[in-house]
Amino acid sequence: MPTAASQLNKLLQQFRQRRPMRAGSLVVTLFGDTISQHGNSVWLGSVIRVLEPLGLNQRLVRTAVYRLMQDDWLFSEQIGRKSYYSLTASGLRRYQKAAQRIYAADHGLDGGDWLFVYLNELAEKQRELLRKELRWLGFGNLFPGVMAKPGVERVPLDETLVELGVQEQVVVMRCQPDDGLSAEQLCQRVFDCWNLEQLQQQYREFLVQFAPLHKRFNKGDGLDQEASFQLRTLLIHEYRRLLLKDAELPQELLPADWEAKEVHDMTADLYRQIQENAMAFAITSMETANGCLPDAEADYFSRFGGL
Image: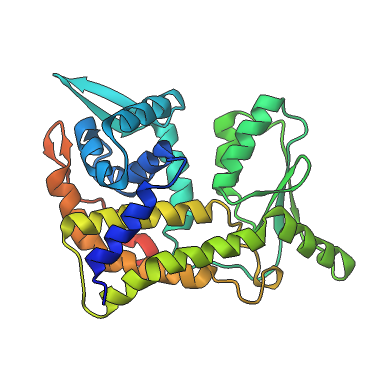
């Protein structure tokens, strides 16, 4: 029977062979999941070292970091001959918005109101930038020039509009579909807009990838510190990619066999089982200007409802 270590090696091999290799996205995962919780600063050499097993060589990491600096995700500080990188204030805010969904205690809504954001008054460049930011919050392109999301939580949306300076140019409405035909039309539009069939297939592929490892852990098998860190990084990276495509729609708008909750629960449980070893590796193996990474912040331990 395959061990947890052999299952992980298989996952890593598959991930390293994926094309295109989205290095920037993986670097953001590393900074968001780990570095932001341990002082938000790390030597570039440490980044190169820990991402090499996931398929990123030195050239790919340096190129990704440079581009993330251009996009205001990262900034650097030169101390002696070494460069140390941190999430910018903007990058930290963007990841924290996503983190509210990634590490939520639970997911799912039961009908009710929607938030509609009308973008037609914006210039094309502003409109595309806002669309990108709203996708981080779970909004989808429901109609041309209109992005929507179920739920009534306005704070992340309002903060985003203010950050981009477009709060006076965007119309936000809170709406509830009527019974009957409009609700049926909304259901069909949602299915097409969020491409639920494709997303469901990706949830199933995620389960195929990680469920065998989860079962090995539940049977008492485990991983060493470095392997646990690699698994935690890969787990959250793949889970984050799924959540960015999922608007967390009300149950009545979803297929009967929707597997998002199973994916969430498995991710949370596996994360809890590996996080102690993963954190120990990060602290002892990654370098700041003052030595090892500091201990995790208190907020880290509230992930998934409590670690």
